[in-house]
Amino acid sequence: MARKLLQNLRDSLDRLNCLKVVVAFFLVAFGQPAWSDLLSMVSAAIGYALFWSAILPLQRRFWVTFGWFAAVQAVQIGWISATEYMGLGILFVYAFLILSIGLQFAWMTSFIRLPLSWMQTLGVAGFWVLMEWMRLIPLTGFPWNPAGFALAGNSYSIQFAALLGVYGLSFWVIWVNLLGLKALLEPTNKKRWAAWASFALFPYAFGFVHQTVWQSRLDSKNTSSVALVQTGLKPEEKEYSRSEPSAYIAPIAQWGMILDDLDKTGERSFDLIVLPEGVVPFNAARAYYSLEAVETIWKHRYGESGLNDFPPLEEPFAKEVAPGIWRVTNAFWAQSLSNRYQAELIAGFSCSEQSGVYNSAFYFSPGQTTISRYDKQILVPVGEYIPLGNFSIVKQFVTSQYEMGEPFKPGNEVKIFSGKRPIGVSICSEETYSHLVREIRRAGAEMFVNITNDVWFPETRLPWHHFTHGKIRAAENGVSLLRSCNMGVTGAVDCFGRNIQLFSEQASGALPIHLPSGSIPTLYTMWGDWAIFLSSGLFVLVLLIRKKKLP
Image 1 (tube, helix red, strand yellow):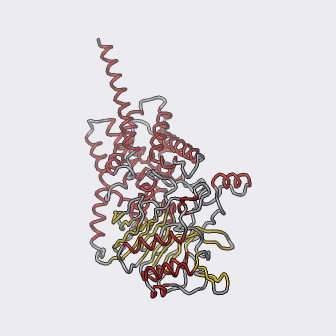
Image 2 (cartoon, helix red, strand yellow; image 1 turned 135 degrees about the vertical axis):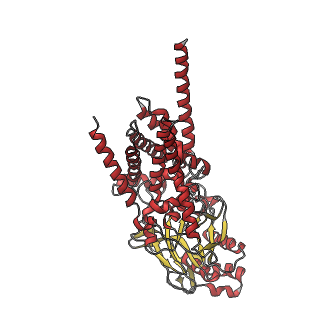
């Protein structure tokens, strides 16, 4: 009888541990703002701890841990597996990422030893931060999926990024879960539960105080009138494709759609208009459109006096292709819109120069003929440049597989557009690099603008995953953020990373917003990632020294 009871107890414990592993998987895998704000809070506090408490007794826990976290990553970065536009080759990238990040987590877990000391919890959390930092090294890096995302789903806890950035959030998530593990291993120890609860709640308490103190110092009455345009075009609609020629919308018609969307707002003027990355085909200065056709469109909409909106017929706005026959450029359209609405205007176009082709953001100011430009610095492998492109076999393969044109050249500096408020621009995935956006802030930006296009991974969580990065960048630096997407999450976020107004990720139109002015200083802007990286390195060093001294 006693043996049977013991066997039943063992079976129950096995089932309990299996249940913990499954519950922990759902908490962590879906515990991100792109999926669930509530699960994010629970995951940040105890999701990982539940898993560790179940698998620590196992002798071969390394491979169990590897498989579990690879499965977690398969959910969290599942958007990468979309093959409609990226082709089957993207699945190899997807597999490599989930397996390599799974190995990182299993390696970190192998440092957990019982009994779990406070120094060990700090060292293991620091080790994970260094693992996330290592992902930034290959090619242009992979900053997309830090563990700290779990603290970005709440308007208070995201404020913690103002101290140590997103990697500080990652440190805190892992550290608090290790404290939760200590409590789970001794469920009757009230002191351990109290310590875990105190540190788990600290980011929320800090965020509440942080918001309350700084909100009272901001001028909520001073706002900027902004129009964010989302074109909502699929690649085959925006760019001519031999496989789907009937889907192509002529560029002049695409501009007509943008004019329609701005007209529908009912506003006659804005402080700022933002158009997305690569808003229409062709580079900014290519003389493609018939001036006569553009004049007809403009007079039909705005009357004869509307022609006064046009900039002078000179480069980069226009070119005389034959005596008396003029063709105008995308820059002509953008400058005309700037003049029409008396608004500063930011738009994404490619830019061709002798040095190469750039993915750029252009800044237009009403009544001016001088155009400022920012060139994207961090390019996407394959999409914007060819890794190992010096090898002809690699270049030919990538070009043939993805119908890639001339690769982009990277820019080499941040740019502040000095209008009514100093504006710093990031293009597409640059928003995911905290160090770059911090550099923009330190250069003097009082407003962030991101122009992007998330259409390449349709029907996935990518737009919301990308949007979370933008919210964290705003909170890290205390600066409001505007996002204009071809497809994605177009909208505005205040200097605390809180949503002001959002546009559907699939819709097209222009979103009018009154953006509160003001920014706040943050410690993260002051010291960047080095504070958390150096602290993590120190904790790991102490952990390794102590481990070496153990018999």
